[in-house]
Length: 271
Image 1: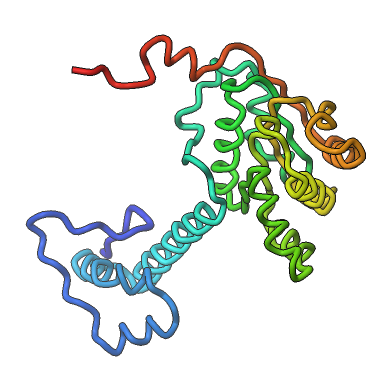
Image 2: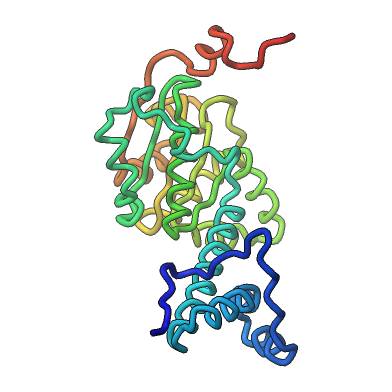
C-alpha cells in the first residue's frame, strides 16, 4: 500500500538525517527556465520522502506544487509588505482592544476590511498617543496579509511627491501609481503646520481616490477643522470628498505612551 503525505508540504530534514541528493543538473536548469524556484529548492526532500514512503505519482506532484504555491504566497506577502512602507511593523498581535477607546464592535467591523472592498474611507482622529497610528498600521498589515496592496504616507511624503513630479508635469501619473494600492494611509495630520505642497498633495490624492480606492487618515484634528491647517477652499474640497463615504472613529483618553512612561514601562531599568 502506498503512503500518503499528511501535510501539503514536504518534511524538513532533521539532525542525523542524510541530506537528499541534489536534482540532476538538467532538471534544475529546466525548473529554473520555468521559474519554479520553490519546487527546485524543495524537490530533493520531496523526492526522497516520496521514495521512502512509496507515494503515488500524483502525491508527488501535489506536494511539489503545494510547495511552489506556498513559496509564492510568502514571496508576494513580503513584496506587498515592503512596498507598503509601514513605519514600525506593528500588527494586531500586539494590539489590546480593551485599551482602545474605539468600541470593540467597531474594531471588529474594521478588521473585516469590508470597508476597503467597498472603497470607503476611514478617519481616526483624537489626541496624541491614543492609538491612532497603531490601529491604522495594524489594519494595513492585516490588509497586506489578506492579499491587498497598501501604501503608507505622511503629509510630508505627499509634499515631497508633489515637488518631485511637478517639474516635469507628471503629478497626475504619480498619484495614479500611488492608487494602484487598494488602501492608502496618510498618517499624523495636524501635528505640524501643513506646507502648501503637502496640502495640495492631500487634496490630489483624496480627489483621485474618490469612489475608486480607500483612504485612511489619522489626525489630531477632526477633518471639520482642517481649514486651520490649510487654505479654506482646499480644505473644504478635500474634506467633502474624504467624508462622503467615510467611517469616523474618534479616540479619547490619556496618551498610552505617557502613561507607560510614568509607570516606568518605557525603558528597561538601569542597573
